[in-house]
Image 1: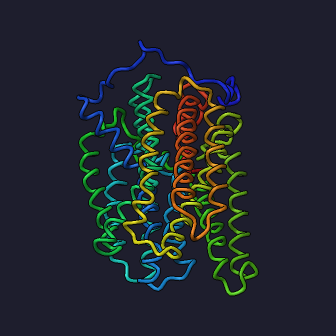
Image 2: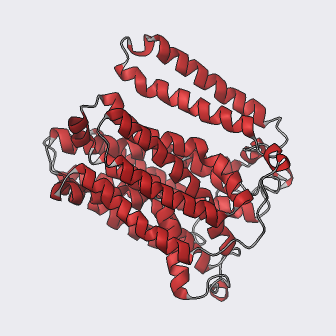
Length: 442
């Protein structure tokens, strides 16, 4: 159990991996081609929400004008996806273990593809915002089977496992910027609807790739029965979904509400959401089969890396969102020019993840997290002095590179630390879901 385990300190290195432990291809993967495609497919699957968010961030001004959207409605394009993705993630973690990871993986890939395609035909703000939520639902369904299967396939520490997880970790940041690049090119050639359809084509291709490369489940699934439903934390699921939805709605609706924060429904949503999240924590401490056993937060390392990762991601998302609006609405840059201006994030992200694959077991985790934090701090400090006429190479370019360094380093450390905690027996009672919680926080 969590409380009985000797915690490792964040300043420690992970268990060293020698040259004799480079690792071999998992026996469930029949060829190197299948192995490579499996890792790529899980990486692309994990990047669903990031791809969509990056796609829409570069098109917010265009979509807003085309559909006559208010600021709140524009915000909900990405907020709706993030809300449903985070709210349903823990639920899908349980479903993945009960019903089979490959089935849920394909369900999420197919659903995401069709949801993005349907969103491309949006003719009103409510249409697009609703389908943004549906897209988030499918993106949350694919994360647990993707990361769960990757961890099950690469069970023992090795250089091969480090490289597989470094590739997987690159999915979120590279997906975000990749979505921006797709939107920039497609929107410049045609319309914003074409960007959505191009993303749907990309995921249709990787759905087929994943169907072939994803190894079959090796154990029997739990059949649907009264007993299996009893072991599912229905009340906890409802509390966290409704709580997150209410709290997020209050924060996003306040800006356009008639009386701002004093508007009745804003206050009501804020109070209801906060109360339900408090009730969720209380219930999880007493539930027989909790969806999030609170004991995992007793581990100082787990809590520290997740908290730091979340704070950094909050800053990254906010900075890139407002930076894209600056480039669109203030500097009046074209979609293709914005894509080129953000391209250094892709190149930098790839480089950082390659470096991480070779140093994770050689450098102190505390040092790596410190480097990421300093990179974030300097990047945000540079952006705080950004003015409309400021040169790109002096302000925007270095801040983009530093933000990618901060996010990718911290994400890799968080990812591997959580996997180490699981392997070391940190969560015997909740082993199936400890690997998903930092994703929900992210």
